Image 1: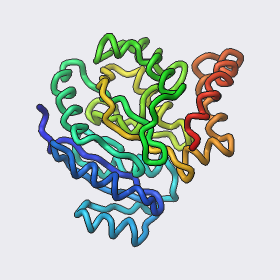
Image 2: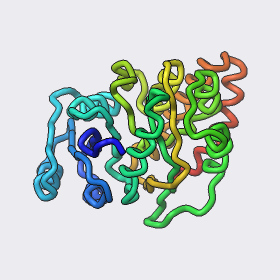
Image 3: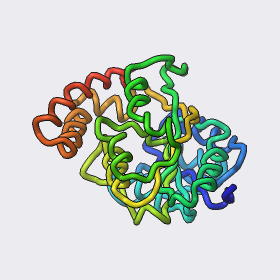
Length: 266
């Protein structure tokens, strides 16, 4: 297995999330401990105290706060080859790092770009049993149920062409192979989807772990919920789908795709 010293969980902390401590605890509880750091563009006593309590390195960005800027800054503070952008509201299974490192070792000859896992939605502290969103994403990921590591640009793009089937907080990037990829400040909601589409064109493999190793929290104060309320997410998703399928067909697909947004509401 690849050394745990080569992996870092970076946590882009934003304002004072009450779920930050549980996220950090889940990272400290990993069966294979790796590096952890907290980065923020909204410094506060709460975030600083949390970092100090758990003895986690703490970095503050001087740039204006933005999702893309915060994620890029957090990722750039890591000194390791492999990086997972751990979302502050989410919880990681104890075997997350171990499973990721095992897969990276197994498929080194495939030139990994990313490893990603399955996940559960966490609503009001409980795992959601069924959702249309989960069914659709699982269907889109069918090629990965047949083959764990995929290098074909066409197949990698195909699993993303009808929606973002890859859960962002479950993704571990191999920075040696992603050619300096950064998240685009042009977007506030679909920046991860745009990044995965960019990586899909590059030489190298997407690797899927068919295990639910992340609990992705959906709550009323989340940025995702807010962006859906104001219609920003729908606008950005339509723009991405039209870039893939063209104006007319992309617009039609966007209307169908937007129906799944109800699953991101509490």
